[in-house]
Each structure stands twice: as C-alpha cells, then as structure tokens.
Image (cartoon, rainbow, N blue to C red; front, side, top):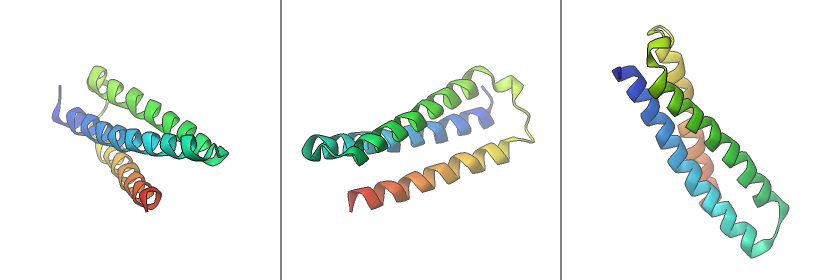
Length: 94
C-alpha cells in the first residue's frame, strides 16, 4: 500500500470514529426523548459512516487506480469533513 492511500484511509477511519460517537450520542438522546430530530441525525450520521467505510475500503483495495495528483484534493475533503464533524460533535455534546 502506498503512503498516500494509507493517509487517506487513516482520515476516513478518524471520521468513522467521530461518526460512531455521534451515532451513540444521538441514540441516547432518542431513547430519552423519543424526538424525531435525533432519529434523523442517526440516519444522516449512519449514511456518512457508510460513505467513509466505502472510501476507506476503496483506498485500501484500489490504491493503484488513484493518481498522485488527486491526493491533495481527496485529503483536503477528508480533513474538512473531519474538522466539520469535530465541530458538530462539540456542538452536540454542549
């Protein structure tokens, strides 16, 4: 595996970790309140989690198909998603 694919996979795994925490947090909210909003956020977080699973597997299994020129863009998108999820997690926990 190339180092670029490894870095992209690590970013996807970090995103999945934050999304897992969000799913658990929204799950606890839903159990306590039975409100529709946490249920919707569980679905959105679950879809983002699925997206990151597919991305990480693609980076692992198809690293020879990704060109080195696209690496900075993919890394930028992954890091931007990670930062956004961290902000979302902080807002949710507060």
